[in-house]
Length: 102
Image (tube, rainbow, N blue to C red; front, side):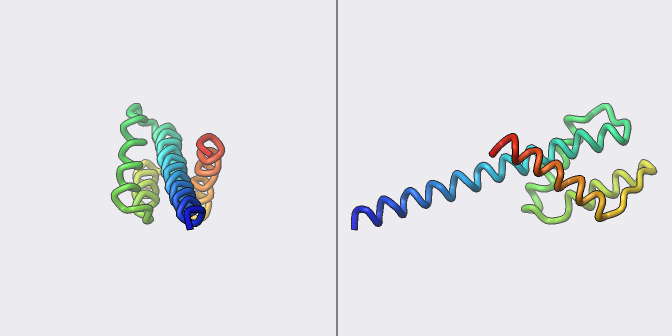
């Protein structure tokens, strides 16, 4: 019985740590995307823009709002990237972030 309780506690800690690392990777991805996009748009406030994108993603709990904001901001500056390509870029930044964090 004690072993089952200990295993359950270890499993819970493992899951908590995994979620924490995933959140760190997502946060880093958002910032990498923000810096990249700010550079494309010629913005000098790269850190502020990266934080805006991160905040949008956190508030939306990982929905598509960050993607839509990014796409709209790029389009407003005359930078048109197809949806699939932009999503691929975001995924590549996640892979880079995950390799750094995990």
